[in-house]
Amino acid sequence: MATVAPQRIYLTSKSPRRRELLKQIGVNFEVLLLRLQSRMGHDVDETPHVGEGPEDYVQRVCQEKVEMGWKSLKFRNLPVAPVLAADTCVILDEQIVGKPKNREHAADILQSLSGRQHQVLSAVAITLDGRMEMRVSTSKVTFATLSKEHIRNYLLTNESLDKAGAYAIQGYAAAFIVHLEGSYSGVMGLPLFETAELLQNFGYPIL
Picture 1: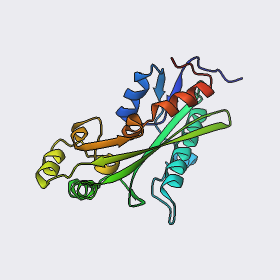
Picture 2: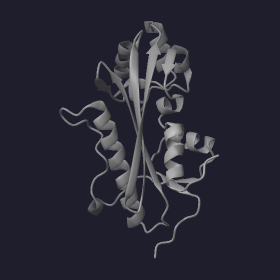
Picture 3: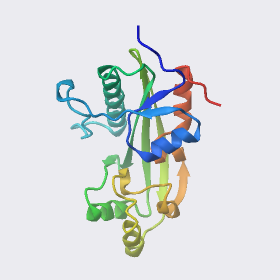
Picture 4: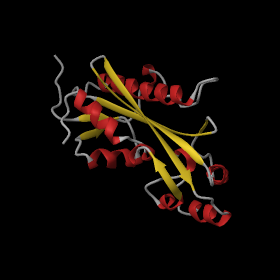
C-alpha cells in the first residue's frame, strides 16, 4: 500500500512566484518538475489548439500539467500526496496573449495592452488517486497609457521575460495598473482563494 505523505503537497511548477504564494498561506510543498523519461511521453504542449477558446485552453493546459505531475510521482515512486498545478494566460480582444519571444515582442505586447483593459485567467487543479478538481479565476486589469520610454525602461528590468502578457504585477509593472478587478494573486499566477478551497477539499488544512 502506498505511503501517504502527511500535510504536504507537490507543486508542478518552476515558477518562483507560485512558490512564494504557497509559502504565503503556509503550505508545505515539494517542487515536482515535469522532467519525464521519454517512455512516459512528452511534456505538456502549451500551444493553443485551433479554435480553442481562452478558458478551454487554460483549463486543458492546467489539467495536462496536473495529470503529468501525478504520472511523474507514480513513475518515481514518491510518497503519495496531492499534486497541484496551475496555468495562467492573458486575454486581449478575446485572443490569448502568450509569453514574449524576445524583447521586441515584449515591447509589442506592452504597447497593445497600453491604455486598455485585458483579462487574466488562472486555472489551478489538484489531483490525488484518480480524483481531480479545478478552479478558474478571472481578473480584469486596466493599464495606463504607456509611453515608448515607459516600455523601454521596463524592458531593461527583464521582468517581462517568460511572463504571460510580458509583465509582472508584483514588480515594477504595478505602476502601470490603473484598476484591478479580481484576484491579485491570480494575476501573479496562482489564485490563493481558489487554491485554499481546493486544498481544504483534499484534506489539507488552511488557516
